[in-house]
Amino acid sequence: MSYLKKLIETVKMLRSPEGCEWDRAQTHKTIRQNMLEEAYEAAEAIDENNTEHLKEELGDVLLQVVLHCQIADDNKEFTIEDVAKTLNEKLIHRHPHVFGGEKTTDTKKILQNWEKLKAKEKKERKKILDGIPSTLPALLYCMKISKKAARAGFEWKNKEQVEQCFLSEIQEFKNAKTKDEKEEEMDDILFSLVNLARWNDIDPELALCKANKKFIKRFNKLEELSEKKLCELSFEEYNNLWTKAKNLTEKEE
Image 1: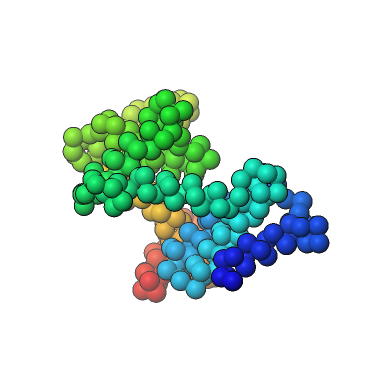
Image 2: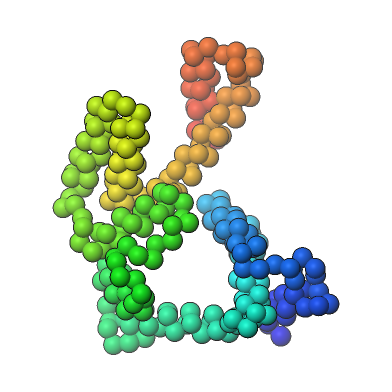
């Protein structure tokens, strides 16, 4: 028996009357958050470039998939075989350049074909931006919206136009008088910034994650260097310590 089949049998046993009370009590909704958390932990392992950690975290993601499938099987909804069948058919259908007669190596055309085939499959989606999960993190959600709109032709002519749009949004923010006006302009700044990232082939979600980690590393170093409590530092002392912390952590990187 393969380890994959053994895993499926293990989860089936855990959900059986002779199994685990906790596993048997779970539903799709009760373990929804677990799926998200495990996916984020796998993403973190990818960012760390740690293949051993990634292997472990992918196992946790796989457990969520198998457990959802077993819950569905117990409820007579679908089986893991149904999931595999649907996925396999989808992959074959969306890759006509591999499994059909449409031979091409143009990645842009491949993505355009993918969207066209996907639209045919999802006939219930009437609008171009339908189908983007609203549960995505805001930056990733924004990127998805931007990409879909661009593929439909709603796009700037060049990078300079994108940069000018971003700068004009900053100016509008500066000109805003009330808090509500500033908040609205900040919305536009963030949205235009995501588009600027897309035009430079940068994933804004990953970029912000890197910035967060960098800040934490530098701030922790600043805290180590300080001989006072941080709340007692003056602005100048903070600034000097930050510069030292930045230089030290950059050397470590």
